[in-house]
Image (cartoon, rainbow, N blue to C red; front, side):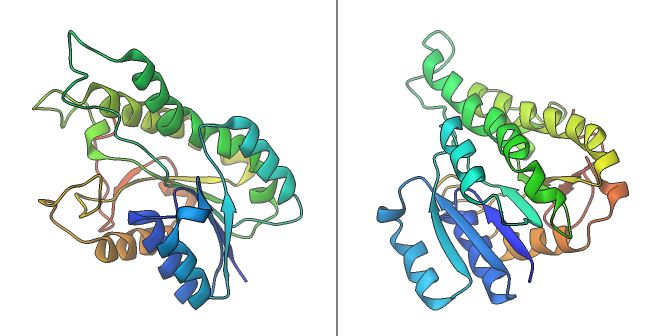
Length: 234
């Protein structure tokens, strides 16, 4: 039975990933910063026996190491770096930037996925599929940036794209594949009410991309519908 570890599993895309993987019979390791407050995730875990809820704040690297140690005997097929924050706010704009919040945004969106890859590398090596999937954003694209703003979020996702592209090269000799996924503009708390697609469509598409992944795609920036976003990761 295949195993997926999902960060930020308590809402939005993370919650939908848990549901769709559980429906497919996967073992789902669902990580949430405050499991006791994750009511929707708890209800899902009651519905599907394959879901295990684990406490994890990806900003706390000691917690990441502790969880990796706790799961030392668990092979992982797909490590799904989904947890993320937006960071930017109207109050924190150029001229009034909250640099502490920016650092935290970078820590969660850029550094934490790399830390997760480091901590769970041995688990992935013992898995069958050996894939690290990262939920990024088109807002991390320099080519696509025609509106400016969102300095924290844009830079953190551009950084995520860059480091995962490098890891796709560094980890290829070990058979570890890297997926950099654009989920589309999704109706979630972060995406807002004017988004174009719902989480079910986005996640179904990304799961299909992950399932059909081949090593020659490693490091590519791929949209939820399977299209490769050439030139958009730089």
